[in-house]
Length: 93
Image 1 (spheres, rainbow, N blue to C red):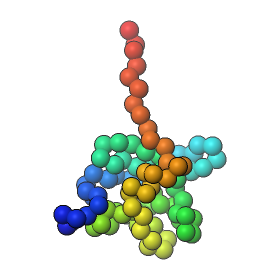
Image 2 (image 1 turned 120 degrees about the vertical axis):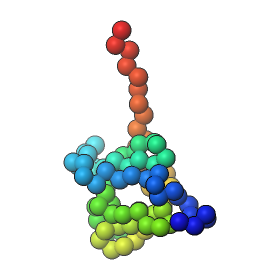
Image 3 (image 1 turned 90 degrees about the horizontal axis):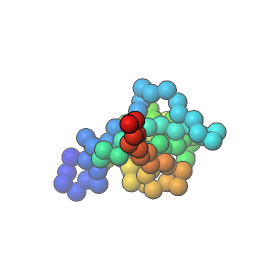
Image 4 (image 1 turned 30 degrees about the vertical axis):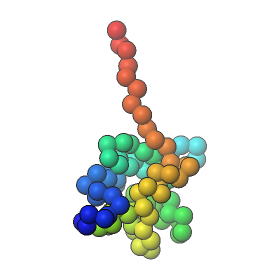
């Protein structure tokens, strides 16, 4: 990967093998970016393809498996429908 690439491909993980995640009637997939977890909509805005079955290209973009359109990881994170997951510590004492 070139030094000018927008994303470190090794820092992005897609939950390909996880079961569907549904919330408020919308399907999401788990996306890890630089150690942060997100639920991103599992629907390509162009043709409705399942983004979780895409791949990360050399530019650090998520490529739709249906038609090859590429989306920057940052645009997926900024999507208002994407949810950032947080870890809450439990006090079991």
